[in-house]
Image (tube, rainbow, N blue to C red; front, side):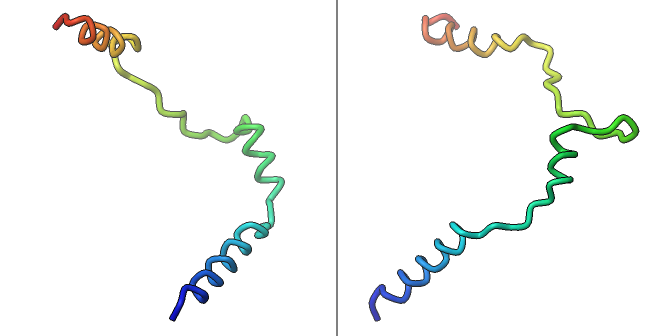
Length: 69
């Protein structure tokens, strides 16, 4: 058996994915874009709690490149 059936199946699936339009909940999208309301509490985003400066990793790279260790 050749590749004809497999290719036809891939084409069918690709076409379905290309033209698939799920129902969009615009009110949920609006809530998400506007952020949390004043009455609702949401978890805060993860923050970097490291104590060293952000540039420290680049300083280490600079030392490695220049031959310092």
